[in-house]
Image (tube, rainbow, N blue to C red; front, side, top):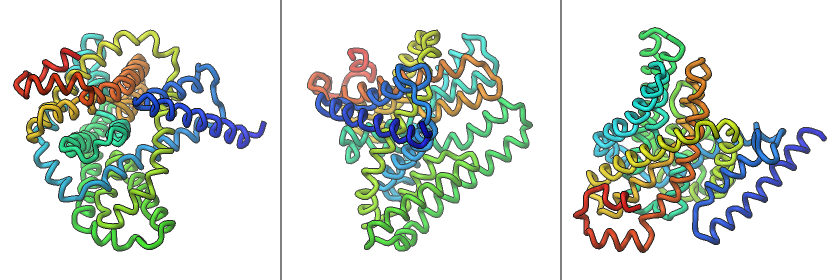
Length: 400
């Protein structure tokens, strides 16, 4: 069979299956993300029906999915709101890093890994998945919630921190000199500052350049600009997600509203592709030997991430229920964790790291959307009303 024909058949069949899975999830009131992941596992390497021709399509589509998810989040907020939230969340971002990187580092030390692998696993457990969380926030209808700006601030701070972390990790795993590593970090930081400056100072000018009267031209312009900036950011070791988010921030006014309406169907399509590709790129046979240590690490770091998110929302003056929503929704790890593990393993550092990180991320991605729904349950709401904010942060989570 011709490769293009096979690709069309595979992609079409899988999209139809995803449609059915999405309807099932909506019917029973839970997130479709775990079902999309399981569909990817079923058609990936070692799965029940491995696909051959469409893996590259899903890989590119998954990158577009993350970019559109973050661009849409950016469209919901202004540049002034972003800067204000970043200023008030600096301490929360530091605490988030400490609480969630340390468990990974200690776990690697217990396993007897070398320093570069210790730093890598610390990064894997530290950074949350912007793509997964963006979809869960939308699915649960929480874009307008008081705690959502705090959640976004934590995500942006983590992604910006990756501009420092990834070049440093790269220098460690390849044994590069201090000067080369510092130079790479300096370039990455300069690019982030430039994009942020343009978003703050010239966002209105950018919005005026986009054709708000022509839907087709507006869609092409916004998506093209978002992908261009995301690609340029990735080129200098800055997260493509950060670039896409800042483009969304820069677009304002009626143009932002129209852009959000036009991009929504595209975002939903490619977001589903993102989760499917994660499953496709995971070999089930590699997960089995490391499932127990990965689950143990996931339990610990889900608790630490929930606690750090709770503290961040508390510092922002959010009520108790909102603190728990913020903490639990931050628990999934994803794209950055896999990138970090791949970087280390590609340099010949600790081959066990890749399957461990994959199993760990898979567990948190499946558990995260489920945990995020707990604050919306009648039981949890009654528990919060009874405590009336007087219970220590661990009480409701312990009961869960």
